[in-house]
Length: 324
Ligand SMILES: [Zn+2]
Image (cartoon, rainbow, N blue to C red; front, side, top):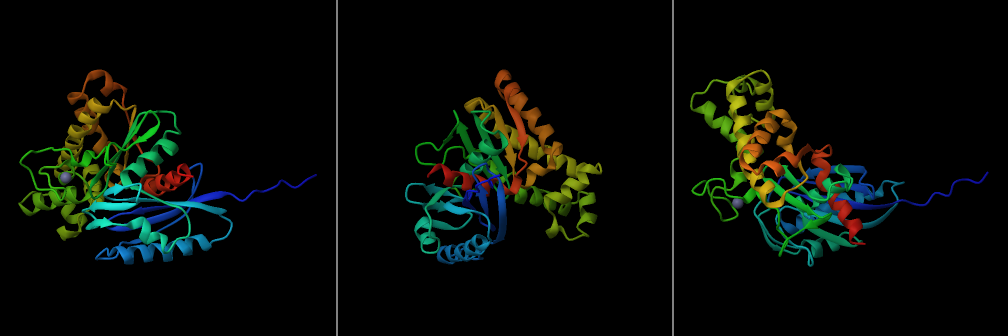
């Protein structure tokens, strides 16, 4: 009997750089996440400090034995990314303008590095891991602090002319609405997302609405999070139910346009609010049905990502395999 020859596995390092937190993990070619960690983005998000911190954490992660050889590093960053140079042209969340992230990271990590928009990376992760390349046209929408969007068209990541294709979070919901850091007014992400939903609950309660949410946060309205609104809604709380219905309907207005414009087979939802399940999905589906063409709206399947918070890391890691 011969012993089975064991080849060292090839892995990549996937990094998801956001305004509040940075996540990273070791990713296999199949999309399997081997080990991950997360830490807070430094308060002033100074680019050099961020790159150094990523370098330290990456070395720690890579020290662990038995994970194979590092093939490359994939970074998904929140903002307008110039992929060829790895420069973050603009990131309102990180408060960055023209930051050479790839160059800064290369001082700390000795491997080929690719930098991509975080929502694009998540869409690639959704395509490979969630759909297993079975559907060729897919949109991925991450509903966290803001709303990110990425598109897979004919089995390829669609970046558009300059790399920001799929930014559904900045589709206009109200032409005269709140100003958005992107420069527009009334963007979808100013009305839905973790921050907007919690703020809507706070305002409604502060102006007199009675709700179970108040007792769930022991009267401290600054503590309200989507999870409290979810709990209250499941117990039949009227305000909480209305907030989820409004969130689903507003998101539905945006996604109905996405369905009409791109006719996707799947829309994969991930991020904080996607965990509300039917509370969000029911009004969302109803609105998409009411507002988009009948055939594409019946054809599109709404899928909640199983990878959820890890989708960005996995997608970024998988993009590093692609660039080899
Ligand atoms: Zn905007």
